[in-house]
Image (cartoon, rainbow, N blue to C red; front, side, top):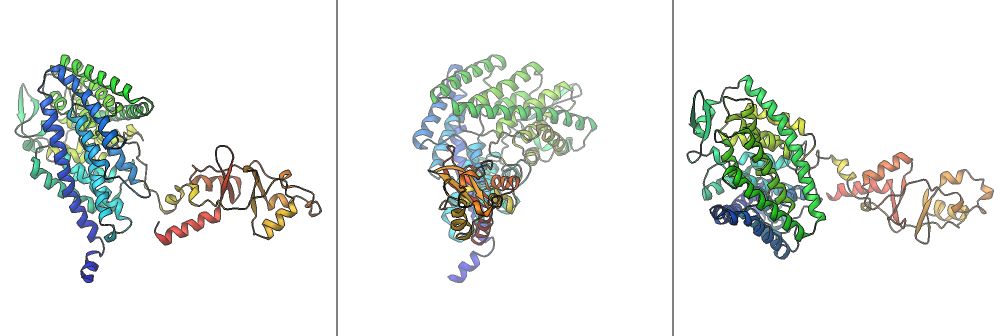
Length: 575
């Protein structure tokens, strides 16, 4: 038995096996979630009278708030952002007890018409499942496997809900960083995503999540010559395998507009989250419900359908149909952004991947008409890649999603559109906790708080002590070169051998510490990182800093030697 265990725990075997198990588990969770949100609630609500459809998001938002408050024990509505947040924590943790509340809240928000995506709760479910599997089998795993299973779970969530395994892998690897990837989780994520995808399509079917790409239920309309030809998905690759110069120019234009649109939407998302934190729940729900009802009625008047309701699949189908004017397409673009931001600001639970894809499809259709493209079906797909890549800072995932959804068509112009949109979008992102790049060994140490290396049980010197007392008690007795001067718990400054050298030895018995101490040295705060402390030490040419609170009360000291010692301890323990 011990030999079998040795073989099972050798190398990456356990984490790879658990990644497969995680993928299957996540697929089952998301299949149930999507069935409830889409099949049980949203589809039925969309066949109700308009006044009931308009009122449905209000009911969903109220149910969401109640579910998060009572079942989730005051859990926040964040989903995909939680995956990114905990990924960067020293000990990633997503309580399993919050998962039912978040999934049910997602069903309430999306199932009753909130304009957010299914992928948010799916990523959260995958991340939580990955961490739960790690916790259950932690004695078989290495310390670093926690982030690998976390990422694998997120990849499985995306792979299932979008029926796109490669997209799931790339998104999970790209999402934690704006300009980097989490490459160590690649193989486990591939296994989890593939397992999740196979399990999921055997439960719900293989149709693309983008409705106008499905064959034969939905087809892509293309104006060719004088007539309208409807071409099935499996014919797209052959028809568009060549790339023309006009396609490249159109992709560049669309990339610029999508980059600007992604920046604008990222700013709106930040504003909505900020206002939500500052606004009382009752007011948020009332304003959100009223605005969503008004948007639904307005959309029904303009488009003969409440296209602001739900994640936006109906809006995609409407915009790719022929003969829509530029004014109506632009109006739909604005109404859909408004519906998404209002739902988010009102506390709805859902993702932004699908809403970004919807905005990209609408923008692409608009640009296609502006340039009078002879292949208008190309532009909605390019818009999807460019807008999605710009909004989430995940260009590779966006292009792969296009490739998987279209059978390989449009990849070259999609790459160009996504690249240009990244340049224009800059560092903006709808993901709140993304970091720019992975940190190196020392850089990770520097992100620790000063409290990790702070000494609190230290001997200070009062201001009325003489220099002789300072020398004999601290310099000679304790081999300390710099000591904090504290009076009744209040930090006054630092006294060191530098100040001592400027005073004649005969005056030490009559000179107090308080008369020569340095008050110009900054004091560190508990909220500082070790990077802040090291930078300040370098700027002021000292190796000891006092740590005080906001009221200048002395807490402890941070020494350069202690920071170096901490690094050695963490290396030895794997911390």
